[in-house]
Length: 258
Image (cartoon, rainbow, N blue to C red; front, side):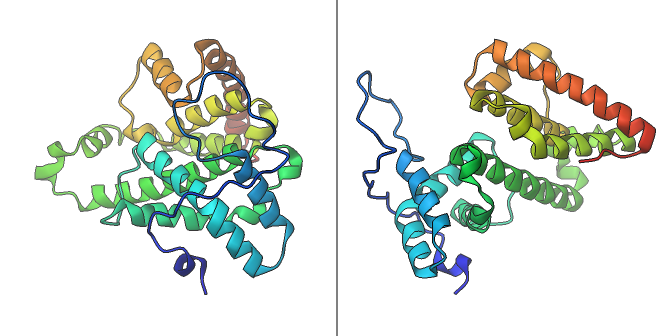
């Protein structure tokens, strides 16, 4: 049975948390205002899933302890970054597509490298949705009636940017691909990677972006990541140096070694 048929597009039940050593004793202090869906038990479940080759065991672990966190992750990614250019009538179907993609990528995750599962699958899910969203946006723009274009701000913004040089577009595509691949080696802290990922998302969605003011961009990134401005500034400086270095390589060779 295919993964897509096993996990139909219906909201899964919340998992029953299994006590593990990783959960540790409860900490004192104020209670969280938001309920966590990606918990230490989710991390433990993913490790157990990867440790077994028995498909029945994997199905049980996924259904009981991973499906719901993946569902909530897909839901939050869609609404936080407004991935609404979709071919489906119901967003539950889009969530289902994201869950299936994350499931296909489970075996690529290497917890022994110290990468956090939440960070890894957030980036994987976002990249899938960016590609999905951009492809559907292009289809929508191609089919759009010129007389109705004014009603779609996304189409309107895009129409004014057709004069961009092809080489700049190609370079930025190289740059975002390089950043995706090397993000976890360039930045060791989760908050730094969050900022790097947010900036990379802005590059990928540049055609639909209507922010040109530096201060406004900083505020937007801060809202996306929840980190302070000094962290954004630090990461931006690193990416600026990388941008110059890769652009020099691109000018000399016509491509970037990703």
